[in-house]
Image (cartoon, rainbow, N blue to C red; front, top):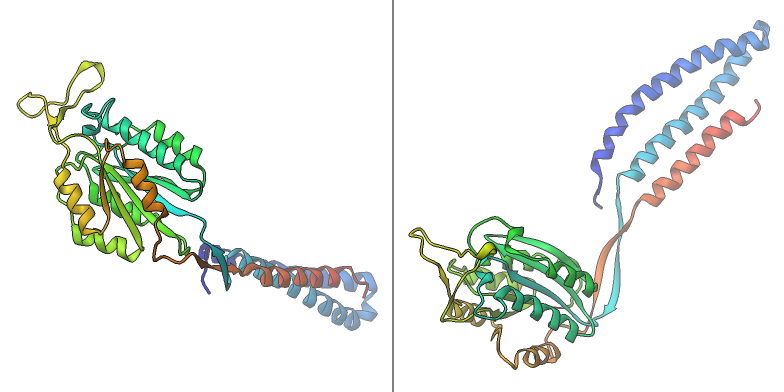
Length: 324
């Protein structure tokens, strides 16, 4: 059993002034009742009033206590729900560093990455899709969802201006992608990396272990060309180095190929005419992941406390309404 909202227990402190108020109300109310019924019936009146006050106050206190417990978010019995796997969970990991403005893959590497994501999602009839972008730092922009149109809308407005950190940050992008597989579904999982590789060193063994732990396949798509290209900016300017010369960005195919091989995945060049057909074959190929599985989710534990709170409220109102 776990708690989702432990901060709610702070409300228990309000029970102290509540009990103090009911005690004060008892003494003032008892005097008024004795005066009303006459002093000659004082003992009988005090006894009746005490019983009525006790059950009324007990009901009110228990009502407040059980209401707080119901708001605390206790998890109930774990529910195990079976399901049939109907598709893949795919996370696109898109490089949005400034080198992706290079135009050696017309109209640009970034535009080619956008069109590939659009084409892959359109080619698959079912499944869930998510999006991670990286430039120095990674950001999970779109969680796993069957909403293809929502994903494409996000992709359409992507630019390197979304993240200001310098560098490529491939390690962080892949780590964020792996962490996007958050639920308990035993589905088929694939990460599709779209990047020019950059120059940042990769921790190959750690990336392999991340993928292995989440049972995820890796597909790497290289964007750009090994011959390289200068990087245009808005206003007709170009990315320049410390000496003022234009920077030439090249596809680091060696790094990306090694990444795919180390992680037992596949590498494709972004301009390969067989890219889509090869990807579809990967998706349709038999996998070791089971076709069905289960999800374990904690049940709602608030209902018993809410029921007890209602019973306590009935006790409180009954003690006050019932003629004594």
